[in-house]
Length: 238
Image (cartoon, rainbow, N blue to C red; front, side, top):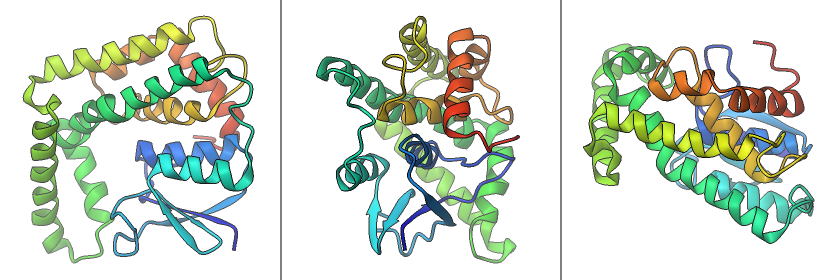
């Protein structure tokens, strides 16, 4: 059966809308693993989230677990070019993006009214219910995201402060990329899948934000996106 990637429905000529799905797919490509894709079914997802990878019938949930499990299963050498100290830095950057920057991205899409006007129809179209019910359901989901953002902490800040903190995260990544082709050096590592996915999602033209504007004016960040895209996504023509 091989590898099957279960992901959220894609739209707007982008392979993936979720940064975590984008991360998993980019990792598969950087590792040169063949796979097929299918739309995620929440009722069959072990943790109720996407992405999920199906490996010879085994369902593997969570993008970080997917990376670890596939690395072990296929004895992948993607990170062998780098020292433990370098990989530790990559780990810290990945955690920053996934546990902090992610909430700024979530704010742009789910909580900012202009972003929600664009994102809500995409969420609604992925729900297998009559249109009459998807409006109230997406409103309910949005309230849940707002509550989760408040509990996480970033949602307690004003939009300007959220944008400022996202830019600080991007600035940290930018500094690391100033003299490197990829996050840690001349060749991609597993952490590049995360960095590429999150920065690519942040610069999506349908969701303008201070962080997006900052990234689009950054030669190191945009050059990095172009290099990873050429390496992992040569068939992405949009």
